[in-house]
Length: 172
Image (cartoon, rainbow, N blue to C red; front, side, top):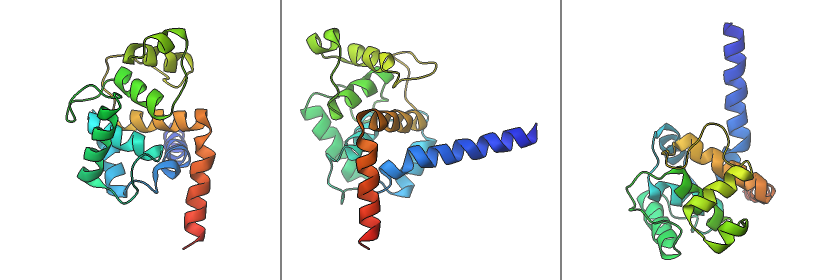
């Protein structure tokens, strides 16, 4: 039984490193990722910071509170977030932020009525939101990274992000 648990933990940890961290590593510091992974409920400004950072809409030199403020302002000015910066973000608000940041096209209802409800439904349909979920549940740090990673894979941005990381390491 213990061997199974250890193997499962090793697999899970290596899976997280392979899928999520390389795509985000160049844009966020390790301390910010540790803080995010430990969060039970992510704030709107944190979600905006990591989402906009993953699509390259934030300057790479920003970090910490300055990056969160800039990301929140950018997302709010575009109408991608509707809550305050320190409010906990719900799953449907996260879906709306991701759909807009990654410029994902939606179905008929999302195209007609662009709101968090139909963004959530579209991401469930595309299997980007997996497992047990309901639209108003609060998003943890791990769940946010999972959603960003799955969306990066879905859009094909993953390969581009890996190329950026490889090229930046080669030029050092």
